[in-house]
Length: 312
Ligand code: ADP
Image (cartoon, rainbow, N blue to C red; front, side, top):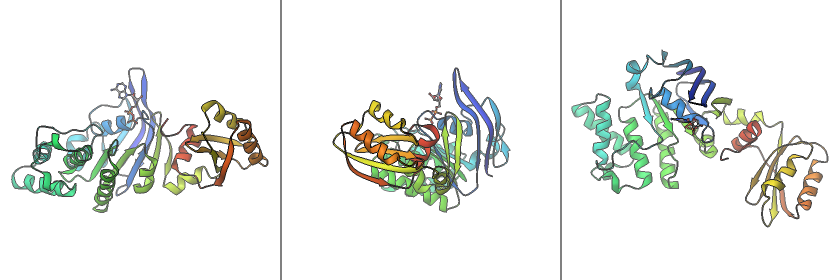
């Protein structure tokens, strides 16, 4: 394992951000850390980056233990932080060159690597423009170039696609897959289950500073297939919180999630359950438009494990 965390704790005043976290990451994987806002993802990445210290527990990266590892393997690690770490008044080239210098790159080697990073994120033709003229998506791409210009072996991405347009998002996801194909190990934090599902080899579901479950998408989905999933579309307005809670009282219902046009229900297949659900819909003065049964996805796994959705 290229990264190992055993029983890691971190507290900020009265908030327990990491609460006995265990995690193993295999060399060469794209490993997703999937969890809602406040789950503890950035805290963990900031500890890996030596920006903050943990309180308790063992962490090792490339067989070096924290906190002593950093100077030994700093050049092999790349960080793409959630908050943009770039200078608006400098050009794209100058920004990357500055970060490259922090990693000790000089002269021709630095120039070559800056150029390579610019090309990698598709900003070579804008290298001389000041960053303040860039769109949000371009800034995010530049942020990535700054984090990878020194050609690290392990790259940490902390929610790199938050708040950007779909085209830039796809560009970033494709870049990450490309970096992985070149042999890099990637740690990718996100609260978007579609992203985790599409690019990650392995996913750890994190909530309240703990890993709740870990595996490939299909292994995680198998965790909840003892439950079946019904998706009921209704005519007109969807249910409010009070109405939706009434479904939870039906015998055999495990969890519910209100969606724009209906309700998703995980259940244990009790006989008579469907009739009870339809009855409840009528009691709420709604009409069924359609009912379908579908395979659970990662959102359903999270819902079943925590009783909440990823975006709560
Ligand atoms: P995530 O990245 O999953 O959104 P964070 O690691 O940022 O989660 O936060 C975990 C918890 O720690 C949250 O409850 C957050 O409010 C809290 N937290 C994070 N940073 C600080 C800080 N510097 N001071 C106090 N509380 C913090």
